[in-house]
Image 1 (spheres, one colour):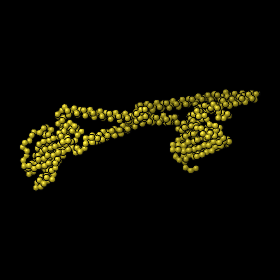
Image 2: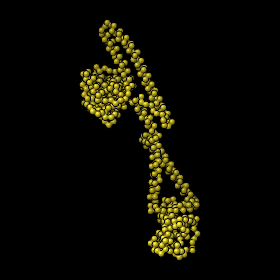
Image 3: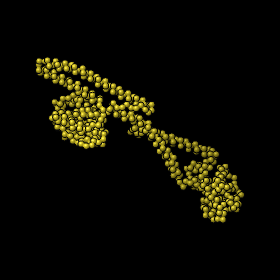
Image 4: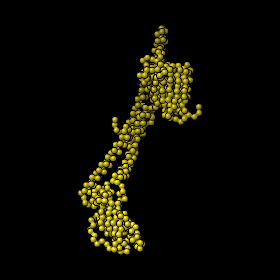
Length: 481
């Protein structure tokens, strides 16, 4: 049992999607290894990543500080009340008369953060504000100093700022604030899941859609080629395939069209050969018949007549079988009801009893003369072994079925398919006077296949034989009676 889909389309989709996902996983692992090595081996990279993680908290702090500066400038009388209401455990505010004179030198990455704070506050307040960053610490979710895992985003990060800035009245505001990145309330597993859903899942969906469209476009010519090969068995004179698409598909279409031409040429050559043989055989048969009439012995003359009649019948039936596989008539919509009624009248004139049950509500697309020959052979075969024959017409979604039912002795189960082969006759005939050359059912089967249908034989438990002919209905419904 293989895990791959049965169709070429499915296999290409699986191969491409799996390959792209594997490449994505491989590149992601390489990216992680490179960054992990850089963080562990390069202090410069650590400083850069440190600043990147603190960028969002820095911007949030700068926005709040700018609001304080604007309020202090516009309403200095109520600034103390405003700061008291604004102060929280994570954003502690304290007014002082002078700046902190015991400042420690800042590391390079903290100096960059201080410069960013000043520029943001100045930009938002449209003025220059004295601002000093006293201390800056990057904390993890437990409140400890952040490590490598926090820098990579696998653990929530927050910035703890200690700073001071001068207000419009000359006093200094001492600020101690802790600010996260806006998503630190999420657990690390939720962060990774969110990253996967937003990045990997979106990529997978986009890649899958592109692969589906690309593979469908790639295999469409192959599907058309497969459909043409299947249709060739029903209509060998169908229109040749158009030569378009990739070079490989064009070559396959050209080879297919060449095969169709060779099959047509072979069938035409076979027909010409058999027609020539038939003509060559009819001439000596005619001479033999003339010489037979010159014989004096009447009994011997009759035996010669019977043999010559059998020879003529064999030649005619063989030509009929050959022509059944080569249909030289246009496809058209056939009124099946009128066709069955015509055959019923013809056989009843010969003494048979034909009963029609059911009607076709729509025409059948097919070849009129060939389909008539097919049903006529089935009816004549049934009448040969039973005087009373029923014809049942049953419509279904894809077409209709015609059942020719007789009450004869039936056929052995192991021979039900063999009798559809050309020149096959039953070992023990269903009737000792049946005659025939074993081509009637074979011709009917060939015509059924040419119409895209099937012909099957079934023995009934109560006795008799059912010949089931299925046809596809491809025409609008019949109106009226």
